[in-house]
Structure formats: C-alpha cells, structure tokens
Length: 127
Image (cartoon, rainbow, N blue to C red; front, side):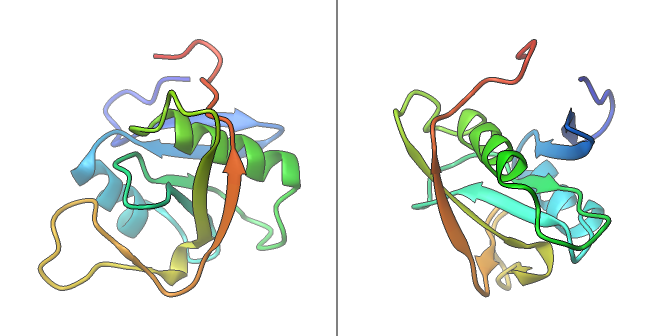
C-alpha cells in the first residue's frame, strides 16, 4: 500500500498497521515524530543499514507472534540484508529508542531490545 508524500510505507497485516521508513531522514521522522511510545520499533541488527519499522500497538499489549514475524521480515527486506537466508532483527518499544547527541540521521541507540531471526520477505506488490 503506497503512502504518497509520507516518509514511510504503510502495510496492514491482520488489522495491524506496519510503517516502514524510506531513508535515513525518514527513519528519524518515523521513529521520533510518528511512533507512539508503546508502538513496537524494529531494525535489522549488527549495524546493517535498513529501514526503521514501526508496528502500531493501540492496545499496548503483546503483539501476536505472526505480526511480529511479518513486521520483522519487512524490516529484513528493506535492508542491505535482503538476500540473506536469515536475518536478526532487533525490536523494542519505541520509547526505548533514543538519538545519540550529534548522531547522523538514522542512527539510534536502544535502551533494551530483543532479537528475532527471520527470512526477508517482500510485501505483496513490492515496490
């Protein structure tokens, strides 16, 4: 699903909105201006360049595992690890993501996180 004029792509999976950043500046906007503190934030681990991904979480509860896995597979797809067989994707509440002083666009620090391993998967009608 296209999100014209927005700094992110929007996908809806089983009623959950998944937002995927388009570039470094857009990742910052998505992470710090769009995401709510209780939303789930994701990014491919090990310093690999890629999109920030936010899963809207209006109920503030645990996300269903299939949603977590699908969002992580999108994070892997929209990264430099797209062609890997398995990719580690770090995730945490958006409130645990911060910007180091003077850091370049797209660079963040995580106060705490978990990692899920997934196979990169293109969205339906990939762009």
